[in-house]
Image 1: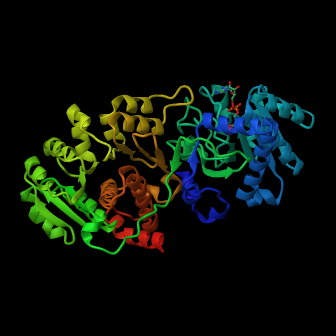
Image 2: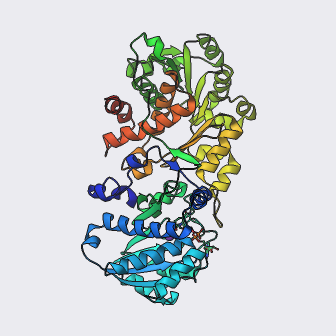
Length: 518
Ligand SMILES: NC(=O)C1=CN([C@@H]2O[C@H](COP(=O)(O)OP(=O)(O)OC[C@H]3O[C@@H](n4cnc5c(N)ncnc54)[C@H](O)[C@@H]3O)[C@@H](O)[C@H]2O)[C@@H](O)CC1
Ligand SMILES: [K+]
């Protein structure tokens, strides 16, 4: 994935957005971006001034990103669409030309938006607006391609007349203004089939959801965010940030919570043992692994600090939960589909903080009455396949072809699932989305981080479950535990780096914590 090589690569200083600089940022939809623009216009600025600023910031960002282009002028192909995005393109063309660049500009369609029209007229006084039929030729000869076809106003698939021009971009440096054309600003999905693949995307004001979700990072390349003087308004989600409150007071281990992690039969305990260790590492005072008697010996041979309890069936779990000090439960990894339903029912009736993953999610998907017992102290951590079983209709909308914008997004899907299930949902992926039933949504944008590919390893998700469960034992509410857990999970992977296997994640947590708490 190209953006991962770029961000955090040796040229990091010129790359405006790494995972670090996106942390905590508000994510906007196209409608929210338009509202911020309208608010600024109502407060006295003009659309023309914003467009001028956007164009100037784009040029500044490209010169910062590619110092060799700053050293001397080259040849640019500027591709303009009919709306505001095209308007930004006309500004960029004028500014590059003023710096001595040879600029060939091609309009896909005449400018129709008022400010863009004025910019197009201004450009026409100093340069030519070439035919679209010649755009591919100009692109093939350019040192730099400026994609200013469509931004937040993309409403339908790009026409086939764009395909040869996109094909000609191969091997060229491509800068997308605001968004790579063809990419949906709200979902990060490609509308239709054609989409520009940029090396650098210069976004304005705030990151857009589509820049961090789904195909967004791959199509955007590196992301440079530039201020254009708008005020912060509503946001659809936030990017996760380094968690607060992980320091520990001195005191008895029971003061730091007691997590119960349930395991399946012999030979199925690897995932659960990693989850239990992660829960301990993240600071739960005590962690007990409950497993069928036949698996006790195997687990005992591989665990020391984690306590073991035989747990024959759901009745035994109910008895065990008579101990109110067991304040967080983890059901899922390796549990076994045969036993999962009864155990999940017993766990849910105790109404403790409960993490549900893997086999526990399958049981909930298959037994409607279990879904009805979910409560707001539950955290569900499905990957895409599990999500499809839990909420097939939402998954279908997410996976179906996107033919018009804005398309249904992973944020929409996770938020709808959280509302429907009445529980926190963490939808796993390179762009993990965490949604609470009260409407809060966060995105863990590990995609802009070199750790992401190393996290695609067996058992990594089980460790995430353990981290989140450990945090819930420590008293974090499920949504906060999920946000912190997802962040810590990526931070551990980033710290460990290449060659990571799931076991390394719990072992790396202390170093991550040390850095956070220093
Ligand atoms: N919202 C803001 O605050 C600012 C927006 N600016 C720029 O303006 C852009 C948004 O402008 P617009 O809302 O005009 O949207 P766009 O410029 O993205 O395009 C909208 C126009 O394209 C047409 N269209 C949509 N999809 C099409 C398709 N597949 N094929 C052919 N035509 C299609 C629409 O009918 C409309 O005429 C932003 O992306 C950004 O680049 C900047 O100038 C700065 C300020
Ligand atoms: K664009």
